[in-house]
Amino acid sequence: MPARVAAVCVTYNRSAVLAETLRAAETQTRHPDDFYVIDNASDDATTDLLATDFPDVTHIRLDENLGPSGGLARGIEAARTDGFDAFWLMDDDSPPEAAALETLLAAAERGGERAGIVGCRGGVVRFGLIRHLDDPYQLVDRRVAEGLYAVDFVLLDGSLVLRRAVDVIGIPPVDYFSMMEDVEYPLRARRAGFEVLVTGRDLVRRGHLGSAPGTALWRGYYQSRNHVRMALDFRSPSLIFGCAARQARFMVAALRAPDRRWERVKLRSRGIWDGLRGRMGRRVEPGADPR
Image (cartoon, rainbow, N blue to C red; front, side, top):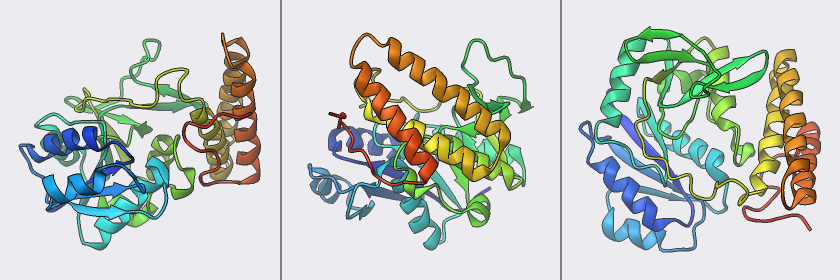
């Protein structure tokens, strides 16, 4: 079992929910050995909050907003340099249950030497198609132990990443900014021979702030761009097929949307084109819509 665990939380302009998540993380039955808060250049009260209420937290304030993927990458990188053996990842709006870390560590122990990532929610990739285990039409029985399943990907939010995997596959893709890092990074671990595991139930309360359907169209750009880029970078015919099928489905949904159809189509089309050309990083500002 990992001797030293670092909690890595990425935040951007959400000091109130960040405080709730950090308090939940501090009351764990197995306390993390250190907390890293990766601040994506917030301009709210985040800095004052951490200095006043959480002075023991390692606050890393980035010069620019690198998004959830870039923030996690920078946090893992910093904690790995400081010698930690495992990295407990979380978003700023996902307070964990009191026994979440203890449960994840026990699951990693049951997973054995090849366990690389243990998450709370995930799924499989079949013929290049992404399927979540909580999909009612997805019948998957890949139990490896009581309450533990082998999967192809997990949500990084709430996951425990073992250093032995990071030492081989590196950090999550910084240039994704947001979206699809939950699939790309675990698939990379699987390709390197590590097991990606998921617990029998979710261990965090997910706020999903800023991602309500129809209110964050900019996410469609990153979702399409990063999926295209991932399929091409993996050089996998099945992933390319699955990506093409998924993008076609997204386009049909955009054309059938009750409002803002052109904006949806434009963002998806631009994402696909940029993915093909390898134009990565923060290209569309969160909250921005095409005009």
